[in-house]
Image 1: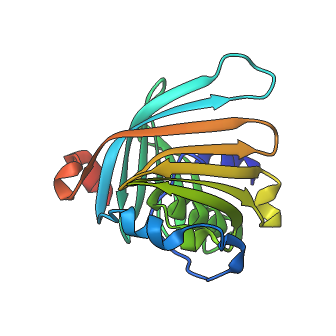
Image 2: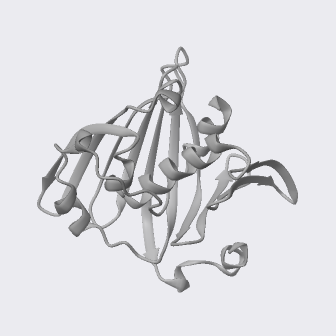
Image 3: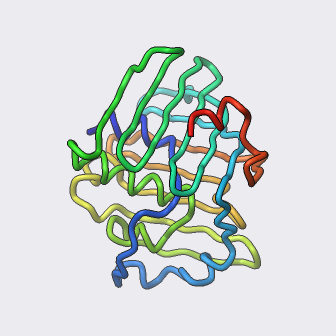
Length: 206
């Protein structure tokens, strides 16, 4: 599970869960929801920095991502080493070139579905969907918002201690604190919406 969460913590997409729980009552959910654009297709650049506990220099990577509502997330790392991670409702697939390195079936492994639900909800800023897994608080200033979440699901808490995210019309930054002390920061930029936001290669993946 730790390996899966570490790889999949790069990703985040559209909502799958909606279960009103009072744990996130402090969050201004309605205000944040009204600020988010919720596009059918969202693509852009990501820059990721992973700080490992006990190591001074962070590990950096960058590439492109695409989120397609109802279909999944495509996460293409371009630097320093090319690889592709694709999330759908039913599976997580990681490829390196033409070779499938990892394939995890959510229908056979309930943990995979749990992780997918969490990740799908994060990138879309679907805080309502995250209520079953986290508790926390947030603020809204003008058209910008920020949220800090603490893991309340026992299984995820063994790996992820908490998550913070902020943005405006879209999620612009995500920080993930792992139970091990590692921290991952992901910054999104150059975001475009609509079918034209995807390259031909990216469209073919869906």
